[in-house]
Amino acid sequence: MGLDRDLPGLPPHHSGAHDALRTAAVGLASATAALAARDLVQRKHSVLRNYPVVGHLRYLLEDIRPELQQYFIERNWDGRPYDRDTRSIIYERAKGIHGEQAFGTERDVEAIDYEYLVHSTVPATAPDDPPRVLIGGPDCTKPYSMSLLNVSAMSFGALSANALRALNKGAAMGGFAHDTGEGGLSPYHEEFGGDLVWEIGTGYFSVRTKDGDFDPEEFADKSSRDQVKCVSLKLSQGAKPGIGGVLPAAKVTKEIAKIREVPKGQKCVSPPTHRVFSTPTELIEFVARMRELSGGKPAGFKLCVGSRTDVLAICKAILEVGTAPDFIIVDGAEGGTGAAPLEFEDHVGMPLTQGLMTVHNALVGTGLRDRIKIGASGKISAGNDIVKRLIQGADYTNAARAMMMAVGCIQAQMCHTDKCPVGVATQNHRRARALDVGDKSQRVQRFQEATVAEAVQIMAAMGVTHPSQLDPTMLRRNVSSTANQSYAEVYEWLAPRQLLSEPPQSWADDWAIASADTFHSRRQETHR
Image (cartoon, rainbow, N blue to C red):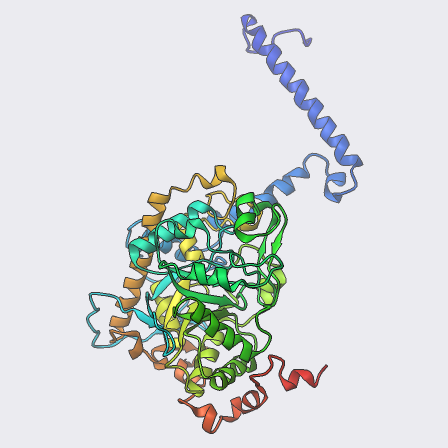
């Protein structure tokens, strides 16, 4: 049969369709041959040189591997950073669905390190209104009533304008706080009037002089706004402690460059250290200055804990200076970020559990705990997370990625590419317009309200009606295949002012080495 004959089964009057099919076939064959030729001569990919054309299937499957893994392969309880069960409960509560599950737990309750909260035989009645935390020590003249769960630090630039609008409007509707992140005080943080915790990082964005220093006059002017309820100095971040924040060049638009006062289209990297202090004493003095410049509003700092000596050095500085921060936010190494080196995300920084208990015990042991409130930040997403962190030493909690999911994040983990598929972590206007502020703000408010309500209900099941009634005996862990202990037994807890009178042997060396004059302990200096 010649090429000019009709194809079998194709009527003669369909010769036009036959010609189109023949042209398409010839075109496909030519394209395939050209691709094969290119694969054979290129030198970049060995797979393609050995397997021209079909080798591209490997790269295609690799490209969609995260989606296949997340939606079709991983089990409900073992996904990372957030498993499917956790994501589902966030989405359901944000939509107004209660977030219940049938048929019992899928977790291995016999596994080593499995933790559970201790319920009471005589549960309490949950209070009608959730407890709140008053932030503000003796030197604060404008204390702030903080919710048990708030929006953690996320900057304009890392998130889109619509995402920030939705978060702030949700915070305004729900009566909880919204941390601005270190990227500056943007119009989108302020648009709907939600309470703000204004975070200042090492780049001093929004309060930056031409040479990159802190501008006290601009800070005093902006922090005096009624919407700014607290001011916070960022020392370090859990996902990347020891290095500054990173905003990829693709996200540094003209608008962001204007807000941050940095060059447009260039990667924006905050310095790793602050210019305004270099010693523990100078840190405490600067936090006090922030409180004064803001007109007496609560002032504090955020850090991912590195060493215990650093925390003790800060405590000694507080005692020497005679004033204290109103709050300390402890960020865990498991905290999130828009962009960071993998080595820092996986291998640097103290996890939230150890960091929280280190700060809490240091403040208790130096007699400072009643003056300083502690916030916990790092994978807070459900009611049990809130209660667990309260037991470990926190007074309140902050959530970032869970709030992003309430806004619509699907854990695509493309935050650093400017290609967020749902318009949350992008500066691409076409992508960001998909995020409807009215709808998503309601989801943020519903998620926060339902999660706090669940935490209060859990506490009631434990026989308490206020976080102050919680104690380390109420959280237990499987320490082996046959033994189970409470946090009161697993960890050491200091008594009030114990470090000032008779430090326990386990703390004595760190206490002796810590100095209000330096963050470099004598132990470090001997190894230089």
